[in-house]
Length: 104
Image (cartoon, rainbow, N blue to C red; front, side, top):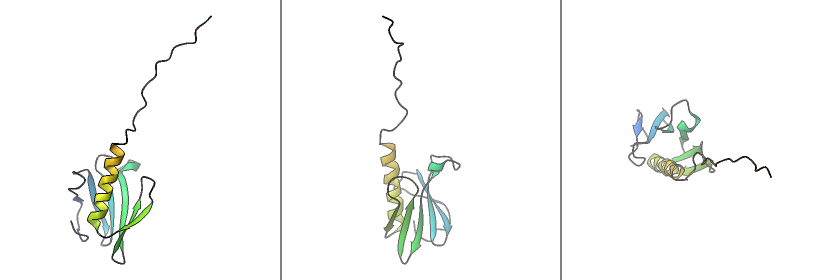
């Protein structure tokens, strides 16, 4: 994958879970293929090439901005982010049985 890719590209690092959508010649959107396009979790990050660097604005997680050397590095970081999110153990709460108070 190169920075000048004109069409949507799937990255191998994300095991086909991540799409890189070009916005223009120097900007891309990194998207989670598992989420519907209407879901807020669909866009993982925006990437823009500035002065030879790739500036990443994360839409999820605690880190908001960072700079990387290549678009491939950005996609790999997004893949790691998705993997970490999937393995976090967060999910639906386990239902706890409810018993009425005893009457004594």
